[in-house]
Length: 177
Image (cartoon, rainbow, N blue to C red):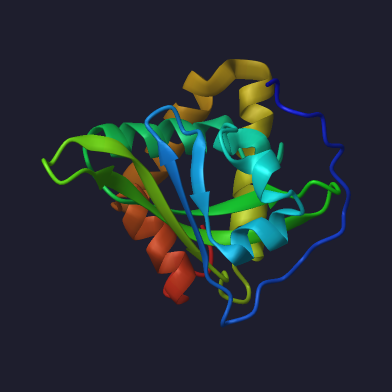
């Protein structure tokens, strides 16, 4: 099935401190499982989500480079920590702080990905929204390679890894870029 066209709106749903979103995908990022809250907040029915590419929730405000970094890290069997703006079925959105890692079977073979998402800390948007907007603009003119170079330069300038940067923002230890 082709990804349905959902027109983004400015209607935000804000998670509470107790909201906990979990999903699992196969190696092609097709949704295999979503907990009850994942299904509810997405606005989709479970039967509409299962088997669909996880990018059914991709909001256009999130730069493509974030997913390039995500899959590079997963290819190295590393955990990814990052801020994601997800698109709901009704066009609304919600922000999450995501921890995404590889999922293995009992023989140690990688079979998919496991994502746990929580509420972002207050104030994160002051840092993430301008950064993402800049990266999206770079991608429009220079492509994903140009935005990848921009984020790598930022990390080098700050002397941080991607996860150190995002976790520092989530913890409130980094308040500006």
